[in-house]
Amino acid sequence: MERKPIPSRLDDLWPGATHILRIERRRELKNHCERQVVYAITSLPEARADAAALLHLSRKHWAVENELFHVRDMTFGEDACRVRTGAAPCVLALIRDATLNIIRSLRQKPRPARENFAARPRAAIRAAVGS
Image 1 (cartoon, rainbow, N blue to C red):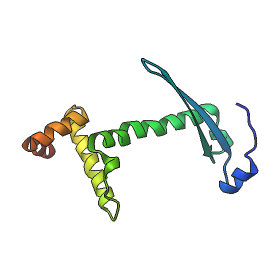
Image 2: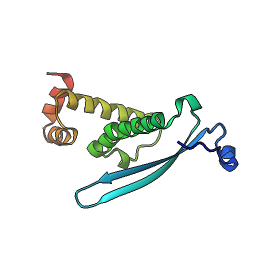
Image 3: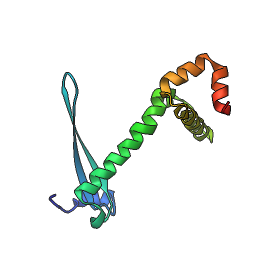
């Protein structure tokens, strides 16, 4: 991995930045291939910022996004929720997480389970109270 100093204009905007990363993603689908290039800035020290460690951190970040936030959005339409003030957004996130935990404890897929429970509220109550 080639090491170059951080350009001074970026150092002014992000004090303490130690690396600029370029990550290229490729995805092969049935009908076509996709390629995406993204850039990131980090302040990790040199000892913790080799190419393998930075790639691992990027993948861990996207694992959280794909396994939690994407599931919450696809199951509950979280991104479309207009609740933005006070404690309500945090409370709703906790309710969604608790609901996902109940669904997963039943070994069901989130979206179909939510639709099933919406049509059968008593089954949802039984699942929530553990009976």
